[in-house]
Image 1 (cartoon, protein in one colour):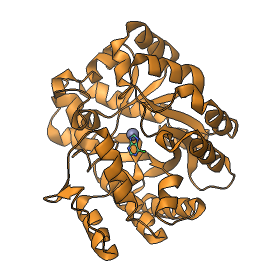
Image 2 (image 1 turned 45 degrees about the horizontal axis):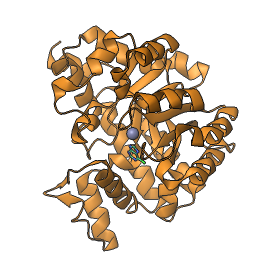
Image 3 (image 1 turned 60 degrees about the vertical axis):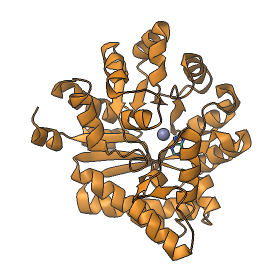
Image 4 (image 1 turned 90 degrees about the vertical axis):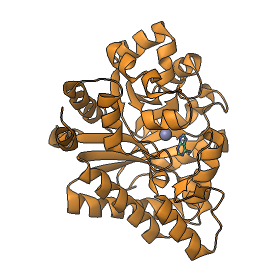
Length: 323
Ligand code: ES4
Ligand code: ZN
């Protein structure tokens, strides 16, 4: 496939953290506005590189600079416009009420502002957007349950899913079973980060205890043939984020990334940007990675988008419209 055909390939994104879309320039502007020194997280107009803990701290610091409804509406609109320009027609964004509260915004106000930004992007660029409320596991079981109860409240605009994010090595998957039960009973789609930093056992426990239809990352399932067979057989969808995995050192080189092996094992795979400027990536760059670094065919890339729509947390009518 030629580069311009890749640019035109329809794309969809299932795994992207809203606050993780803020460009270094925007973070710098917000920091200047609020008189905050961000030299510890930015250098030479880019996010400083580091391990996952360093990343999570930088994410918290950057998030805390977005403080008003206008800030969040604009952050949302800007990101959706950017991926629409890359060919995306559907996106699901992770939103974190805990991060919003830390920045001084009530969760409901935050969701309202993000939804307003999404509505603007939908009107301007035709991109459909849904929101997935996340609980952050290193904030503790009680915080994750509170996030689930919040997500389950009626009348939250565009909220269609609940997810578990944060440091995967904190706690056991079963600790979050009650949160997932609350969200599931409310009719929300379920996804959990697993198999990025923790290995196959944690993936298996996550599937057993939380019953998500999708896994954030899930790539380390490749280390266990039986688990891989289970994921393929059960049709669990993997939200694979290669650029994130490479930036955080989960794999030492593009060739070492298991994207292709997951596809060849029959897993249902999507590609996603996670926290694009933090990891110097974009949605289009992830599709390009699949083609140029993993040797996957155009038809396989088109399949990523199809799978994303099949697995999207949208109602029947919206899915039909997206298909
Ligand atoms: C994450 Cl809490 C959070 N924010 C952004 N990216 C993440 N990846 C895993 N947890
Ligand atoms: Zn993530």
